[in-house]
Amino acid sequence: MFNGSLSQLQALAGGSPAPTPVADPDVVQLSGDFNGDGRDDAAMLYHYNDDSIELFTSLANASGGFGAYFGSYKLPANSWKWDSFRSIVGDFNGDGRSDLGAMYYQADGSITMHTALANTSGGFGAFTGSLTVPANAAWKWDAIRLTSGDFNGDGRDDAAMLYHHKDESIELFTSLGTTSGGFGTFTGSYKLPANSWKWNSFRTIAGDYNGDGRSDLAAMYYQADGSITMHTALANTSGGFAAFTGSLTVPASAGWYWDAIRLTTGDFNGDGRDDAGMLYRYKDESIELFTSLGTTSGGFGTFTGSYKLPANSWKWDSFRSITGDHNGDGRTDLAAMYCQADGSITMHTALANTSGGFGAFTGSLTVPASASWQWDAIRLL
Image 1 (tube, rainbow, N blue to C red):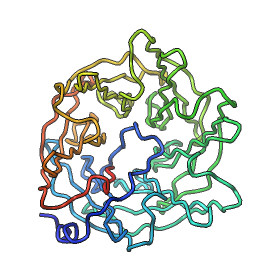
Image 2: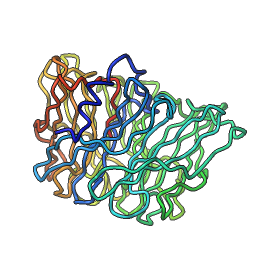
Image 3: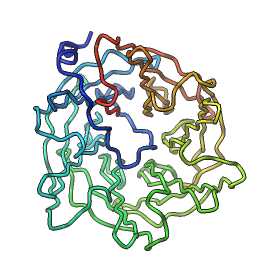
Image 4: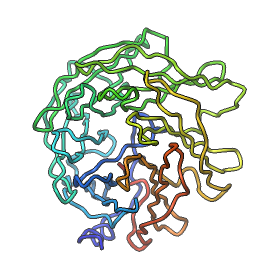
């Protein structure tokens, strides 16, 4: 069932790996179509006890569920530190299959970009480096947020970076994808002025919000008065970004808690424009799925709830979510990996409907507890 990798997991998994480092921890990851069959799949990076890291794929089926995870490429033990890289998904070489990209922080302070290209089975090749930012550039690792999308509309996905300067200004950079799947030099475009936005008060998503064929950057911002606002920085033909423009305000009286929000994105209603999605955890431990539809100007409409997980049915820290068109119907769905109390791990999908709302989560795959998968050793993409 596990394509020869289960025994490795049983033999090597264990210990207490460091928590998964992400630049924007409450943003749901985007999945990709790794075998090019028109359905988005799930990918996983698994951190073994010997510090090797294996790339796994779970292919989506016509119902939007997930097949068994199978391993492909493995980074050798001690070659990459688990806390020293960030991962993105995108079709970086334009061949119709999504790949894995990574930004790695080297021991000498340089930062490198790498790509693991997907093959026709949905597995991955070795990570290949393409860009080095020298140590003398003095980029701070904790000052970076990384995301992906086709920002210049050329059919290849790119990397985007938000960089937090010492003066509290925040600059938007783009590294364009090449025909080989590598990355070009990061080029800055718009910069938020010093002290205009607090680094820990916003979450960022990428998608084509105005339907012009280029991915944009959007942000949810938590204002000092407790209100929450949505903003979009539209991409131009060079892949750079314009200023963030606000479109939606959720008033403070709504009582939304910042730590109760996970933000995501996708074309949930299938209209050709990406939308914003949100998972919200209530005080009674119920979790509701919301959608804010993208407008023709690239802004966002009111958040509307659809499915709600009943109180105490899912623990907030026991699941990780991804978005993608998992059943191939042209609408982006929401999927989740859940760590059960008995140590088993299950995969679930909430399919999107024509209004952009979601149905109930339906389970499709169970990894038994005997596989000994460690929850903190998993990154889901």
